[in-house]
Length: 204
Image (cartoon, rainbow, N blue to C red):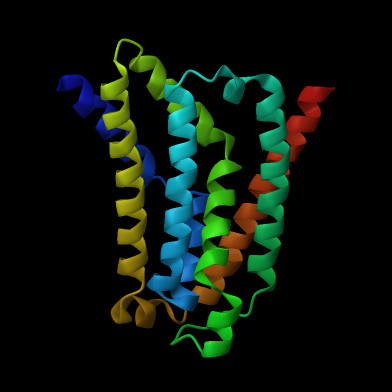
């Protein structure tokens, strides 16, 4: 029980730190509503599930230098593209029109969430670190841990989407959303460039 509490607390505290996933959920929620953003949440949870399964099954390939370099390079490019999209976006808060919903489908958001989660090398390293703590656990226990972690990721992300999607939150953030979007876009671009520069420097 003590081990479970320690792992659960460490995992949840990591979720509280705003990152790429948070920016993606927040922007999708505020522009298209929490129902549309739930696709992003499910995609992120699925990506976490992939890393959990790989780490707990002992797939060392996910932490090999070559794989991490590929993920870092592709992930950096993904962040730059996403950041530029944020910077160029026209942002307004309100009820999404049918045309907007057609362009921003649940399935598309699912793909964005999946890509955001899979292309973040920190996720792989985090779950591998947790798996190292659980080396003595059996398959049944590891399965319970994995289901718990994925469920918590999904529940937290949905909570964020629903909280930001409330009428009160959307009204309060209506004036600052354009600035928040630009700041988030700039942060994503900087993070992406930083990942690519670090990768290039390490390759020399």
